[in-house]
Length: 202
Ligand SMILES: C[S@@+](CC[C@H](N)C(=O)[O-])C[C@H]1O[C@@H](n2cnc3c(N)ncnc32)[C@H](O)[C@@H]1O
Image (tube, rainbow, N blue to C red; front, side):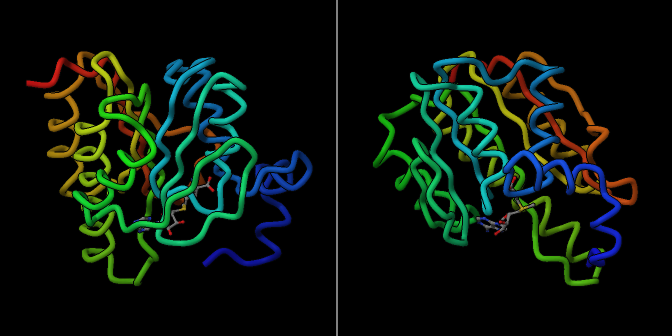
């Protein structure tokens, strides 16, 4: 739990307030994209675990008027102009894929991004496993909706599940990287696994 006083001293929290982003995490996607160029103008982006919508705001800016953003979360996401929102549990993989396909024809996504994270329980083992399940669900959904050549990024907590997840991304993409943005909190265990150039699905 982050205290109010701590938030007021947090540079990215303050910046997000000033610049109209719904979450400080918006700056993580900005950093990731500045470095890896996952999202470009005109792209179709699927944002998993998207509430309250900071990443979706950034994704919409990056894709511009010709692009599309489809945002999925367990929680309702307040409207963002030009963004389609879906309320769905991404661990219910097949129903999430179906819901995305209702608004996107098959394999029409250029990029799948996931900042999904569990509500922390205080039980590290449980939280690590839950983070892995969310990341693995994001990868499964990406495999079903990405165009060949598409890009992927998902958050996962550093844990015993991390290397297995990295390996699974590596099997599906021609280039795989791990990255922790400067805007991630120092004490956070999160890391972002990036996959570029989705291999042709078999
Ligand atoms: C760190 S927040 C995402 C912040 C978001 N990227 C932003 O910039 O506003 C993590 C999100 O994951 C969502 N989440 C957790 N479990 C989920 C699940 N099973 N299905 C869909 N979303 C989930 C939570 O509801 C929460 O909104």
